[in-house]
Amino acid sequence: MISYYRKLKVKIINKEFVSEGGILYPRTAIVTFLDDEDITSSEETLGCPDIEDIYKTINRGEELVLDHCYISDFSLGNYRKFYKLEEKSTVILNGFSSSDSVFDSKTETDFSFALFKKGGVSFEGSQFVNGRVNFNSAHFEDGDVNFSGLFFREGDVDFSNVRFGKGEVNFRNSVFGNGKKDFQYADFGEGLSSFANTEFNFGELSFINADFGDGPVSFKIARILGGKVDFHFAKFGEGDISFERTEFGDSRVDFRTVEFGDGRINFNRSVFGKGDISFEASQISSGRCSMKRVSFGEGNKNFELLEFDNSELRLENSDFGSGNLSFYNSRLKRLCLSSCHLDHYLDLRLASCEYVNLSNTIARDIIDMQPFDFDIKMDILNLTGMRLLGKIFIDWKRNKVKDLINRQEETNIRQKSEQFRLLKENYMITGKYEYEDLAYVEFKRTEAIADVEEAVKQNSLNRLWVWPKYASQWLILEKMGKYATAPLRVLLSMLVAYTVFSLLYYVLMMFSGSSIYSSIGDPDKLGPLAVSFYHSAITFLTIGYGDYYPSGFIRVLSGIEGFTGLFMMSYFTVAFVRKILR
Image 1 (cartoon, one colour):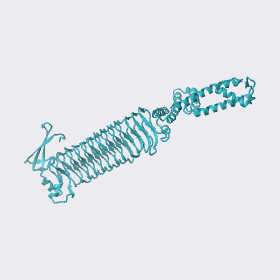
Image 2: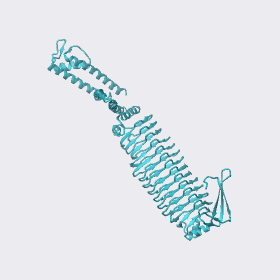
Image 3: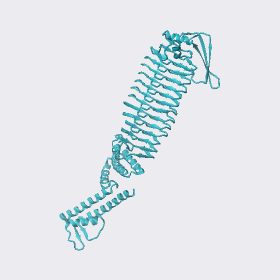
């Protein structure tokens, strides 16, 4: 039976109709489906039971079989009036089937407060062609319930407060027309709940406070054109949840405070449109939520206050479109944004997260990890391969950035070095010059180690020269002045070097043939120690008065000290000017 047509015509003839199951109906309905140009698209011949006969069958407690039928104005509300029952009294249906049938009504097709006994209920392939459809507070006992291939042409559809038992609930391949689709407070029991490949079209789709039990749930390849998609306060159990390749259209999507349970959650390749998206305060007991290659559209993306303490949220290769993305005050075990394009503001002020992966991302706006009203508890931050065209706001000290990078187990020392270089450049752009120096020092340290490791790996004989080179860099560039970032340390190093040379002069004068002589007769009568310190001072500072001159091995040592002093004064000048100019 077709699902797409502009209108239909129904002709009732007084001719008996025998269904495929052998049931005899007194009349026959010929249903003609017309396209946009009023051309016949399809024609169905169906049985046409009398509505009063249907009511009598229900009242007798007999099984109701309406397969391949045209049913006009079916209403349990009218049934209650017919038998003078209370308005919301339960109507028992002892076995029900209406596969490949057409329900037509000027106002409402009403199954509200029905109790479907014995399970095995089937509406497969049926159509609700006019009016509202009402299953409010219906109760399905244990057994499969088959709504697959249904077509709700136009109007609201109400499944609020419906209860299903132990069995599969199947809406697969169904089509809902424009209007509100209400599943608020629905209880889907313990079996599979499937809306796979279902088309919801325009209008609000509400699963507020719905309970999906412990069975798997599938909205795979479902399509929603626009309106609002609301799963606020919905509850899932132990089963897996799939929204893979679901198209949400331009709807506003609300998953706030949803309990996702223990199953795996799959939003891979789903598509969102212009509406805002909110997962605020949603929870996962354990497991993983995967949102790989998702297209998030133009709205804001709210993942604030997540309670994923023992779970992982994977968003790699996703397109976040326009609109801000926020994980403010969320708790996760792992958060992966690898290979994403971050073109707008990203709030990563997480309450806690063991591992944040921003590797291979392209960031064109602000990434905010700056602690404000609470400390961010993060163990590892991976920035490997990031192209930073925007800015990262991150506090070197409060965020403990050095530890965040060094704790990485999956990256090598070269990759850690590049991450420190990235942060160094970022701190320079953001004007955090103290943090720039700290990042620069870590960059140079790790870069030096990486150079050694790579050279030795290339040829083991390289260790004969790379290790001495590394040792000299470690002593001169790092220990003496932290790569020209600490002028006071350079001054202290100069004082230490001056003192060491002075004492060496004294020792050589006392225990060798080397000496320091006065060229002007030593008018100040200086002792050996004073001569040693004085000669060291004019040599180290390259003053060169000429009133004292060395002989013996002290000549060689004086030349070395002169070069050392010249180098260290230049080193101090660079470090000092670097600080002042910024």
